[in-house]
Image (cartoon, rainbow, N blue to C red; front, side, top):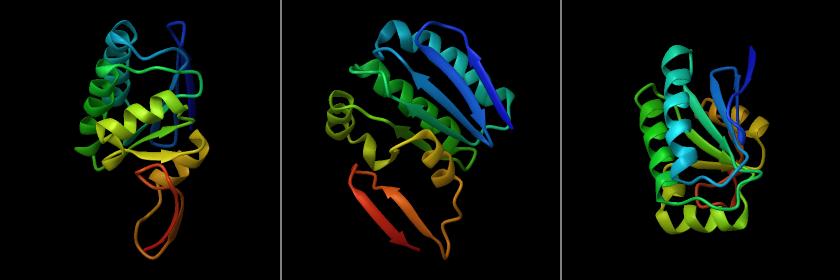
Length: 142
């Protein structure tokens, strides 16, 4: 199942399988976060959403409210047995993820398609290709 929605300039939502993909096409500051929090929470609660993926392809900046947004969505999906991931992270946002320690709980993938595949992998007896939580390449044999 694939569902797409574009509501606010700079924010685009897509649901693939059991993943909510949020395309952040602007800097993630207080103003963007307020709207994004409300809408993403409604989509997570209304649908069969288990994982949330943030795509940062067009975002160069994220402040502390963006960190809070990601942490809050992570907690929501974690209680559903899900994961949170980020994709297409640019250097400025990547530094914020590293300094804040978010890569300890959030997985990083090159693309949304790889993230959808990665977060849905069974962790037992499979090889998972992607990026480690600290942003480096890895190949885990589990």
